[in-house]
Amino acid sequence: MNIKRLLLLALLSAILIISMQIGCDELVTERITIVEAGHPIANFSVSDPADGFCCAPCVVTFQDESDGPRHMYIWDFGDGVVDTEYLPADLSTYEAPTHTYNDPGRYKPALTIKDTTDGGGEDTQLNGPIIYVGIPPAEFVVEPDSGCFGSEVSFHPTQPIEIISYTWDFGDGSPLSTEAHPIHIFPDTGTYTVKLVVNDAECGQDSTTAEVVVNLCPQISIQASDSSGCAPIDITFFDGSELWGQTVISRLWEFGDGGISIERDPVHQYTTAGNYTVTLTVETDAGSTTDSFPEFISVAEATVADFDVEGDTAFCKSDFQQFQVNFINLSQGAYDSSRWDFGDGVSVLAEDPVHVYLTPGVYTCSLFAYGPCGGDTIVKDSFIFLSDTLLDANIVLDLDTTYGEPPTYPITASFFDASTLGVRMDWEFFINEVSVSTGSPTFNTTLDFGTYGVKMVVSNECGSAEDSIEVVVSPP
Image 1 (cartoon, rainbow, N blue to C red):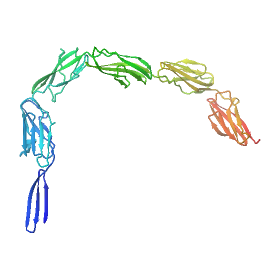
Image 2 (tube, rainbow, N blue to C red):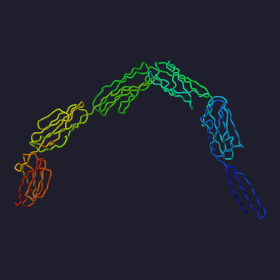
Image 3 (cartoon, rainbow, N blue to C red):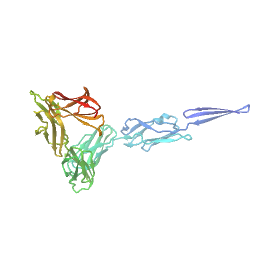
């Protein structure tokens, strides 16, 4: 027996032809119609009017935007009319139906589509466009609807369509407002009835009202254990607000440095110098009030003394020029006085002093800076050099030697500057005319048997001078 199968699928149906050869003479053919199964997804829009609004009677054209197989349409137009059609002959009638709304109102249509084949499904779109028929509803929200005397109240209409005009009556005798989103301050405490009238050029007008309650809210007042101090500092804050007999629901302190607290009388630590604005918000059963106190806390930081000079710190004394030094105060933190000691017996109180050195020498300078958070001192040893001409006669090279016990060789030799005169700033040592050390007044080495010519060259801003000795190391 031979079996041949041919399967042809179309969008809604297919034909399956099965041919069976039985024996040699008999051919059996069977035709089967297969309907495609699937899961539809319902969706629709409004094509006219595009904004979903019109005056009664209002003719609305819907547009089917569903996906998947669908053999049954159920249109629920939201006004009690439901239109159902199974396998409509004219699909366009149900893919783009029209419906007339005769009464003003707000309508929420829905569409259900079904695949009626075996294994098929259905789906309903309930969140489609809203249809507005007739006068646009006068709806609005109030922010806040209960607040404190003197606070701003915002009004926001919620119409889903464009309105020709708005008229607001705040119920307090103030002039009417024609703004779309007005902000209003009521002149006294009490309950006010606010009325909104909206007008549409085609369908007419509508109005609605809402109540706004204005309370006598807390009058914010704060105190602190300190208004200034040195970082780090702990400050206790006190809420001294006038509550008018109301019950406190919550408090929020903002200390100006990012820190907050919900306590009544909190303690807060400031760790960084600065001027801080403190804000307190108090919420009671009558409403919420916020007030800020600019630069309420002033925090200083400890003084750190430092200084430098403008230009050089080393000069060669001249009969034709003064050695004048411009000192620069680089101290950090809060300080209000600076005392300088120039190392030559002269001291002054100044910010950035200028001092003249008269006598050659090496001077150690210091600065003491003092402020509300205490003082600090910095000392710079051998900071100022006023040189004069070096003379060879004033330069003395000396030597210390060390032998082992019993005497062992090589010996340890220490060469050093034994001079007592002249300003000396740099040194270089030579052994047999070969440089062996620079920058230090002392040179240590080991010497074996032999004769050594050792020289020391000393220099300053005015020049150089030298001294030499001969060292002989011989067996005992």
